[in-house]
Image 1 (cartoon, rainbow, N blue to C red):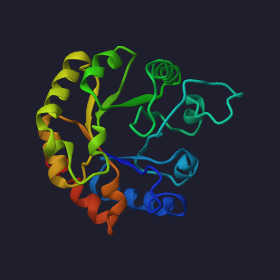
Image 2 (image 1 turned 90 degrees about the horizontal axis):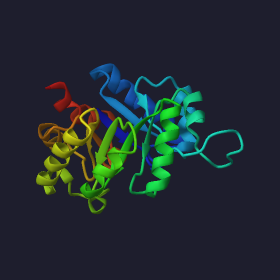
Image 3 (image 1 turned 180 degrees about the vertical axis):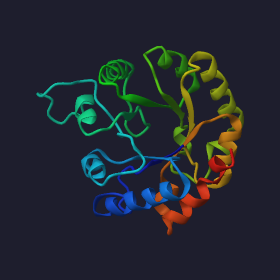
Length: 223
């Protein structure tokens, strides 16, 4: 799965969100269901109204529910939009251990699956004990948004992460991110044993976004 984190990139969100949905929808029509998109919170409802053919993932959820929750992204509100998965603990939106534990619990109650982001393998065992985690994404902070990919710069750590995850939580999927931007990075990630990759800046900067996705999806089609 290619997980496209739109962040708040101007070229992908706001007035351009409809065009982004159209591009990814066309990629799904051409190549099948190999794509997921993480829009900003303010765009979630609009994206869901545009009949996406791909999985929509929330960028964050809060460990709180109910109606008196001003400013919070509640798991119940996500579910009401038809969203069944959220990213948690991205390096740009970190949660402390207590908040993370509470949020995972609330998401489980609403049947919201979790993509948990980590940047330190030492934390993996503690995090996997918090509850059912659909996917774990390894993203070293220093490589996020840069020109160097974790798949090429830290292959031994990537393989250690995947091996450790298989032992601690064999039901969880391994996701590789941070600097992932081209077909070589994706091919290597899959060879190491990842099931998905998480990327952002490469998609945002691509001049022809459909051509870019057409290239990136090749390793998934060859499996």
